[in-house]
Length: 171
Image 1 (cartoon, rainbow, N blue to C red):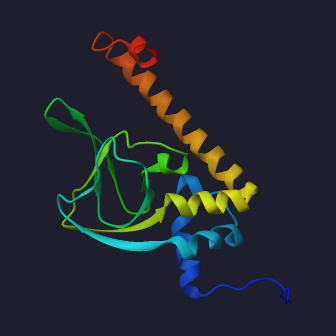
Image 2: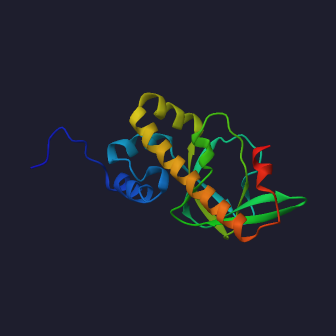
Image 3: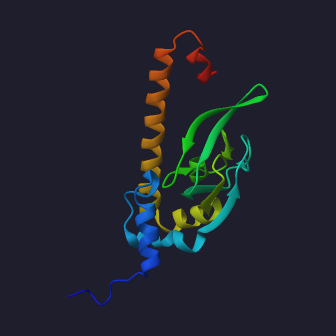
């Protein structure tokens, strides 16, 4: 018998939780915790070559790809060099989970169209302020994500030794 005090969720909410849970930043959250994000989430549609955000823009939201593909690029002189392709069920703009950050890459829609779930920074911060456990779980996931990125960066550096100086990262 189900506990009468347990919140039940609609089919749509459960589908949203199933969509969110495989995403690194939300994987350790329970349905009750994920439900805190629902009121803040909205879907935005984009078309091919539309810029979601530019490098150096304020980090105002995290994006979850519901449909389509997005290329994350860095500006190298006057060109955009793709560093990663993000697909359905993945997130980008993760530094919006932190306070007072700017984008470190440009995000451009590469598929004919894309549907992105947008979670604004201010809403995330409100959730974090009122739910320290959610903040701890999401921040731990973010730290793990950045650690994995550092490992890939250092491995790439070792494999292409001589093209740039790692020391420049710390200057």
